[in-house]
Length: 93
Image (tube, rainbow, N blue to C red):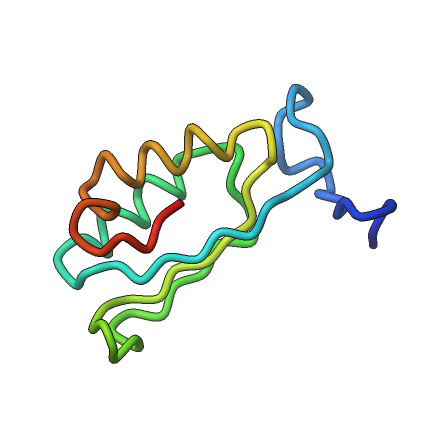
């Protein structure tokens, strides 16, 4: 269900987050895929999270996708860069 351009989130996120979500996709190097998933799973601003391990071929890695509350997107992308994704693969942000 949508409201304007923003997706309903069904109460999954804390009240301080609005209803507008940004879709974030990452190709994670194989050695960072588990850590990336743990980081995203622990963040209450991330929902609709899925991962397909080792399915990316060029570059090789895991495909991770999810929706992030707009208000928290910069922080989530910063955390992903902190894992080394931005420096190594430049697919974040």
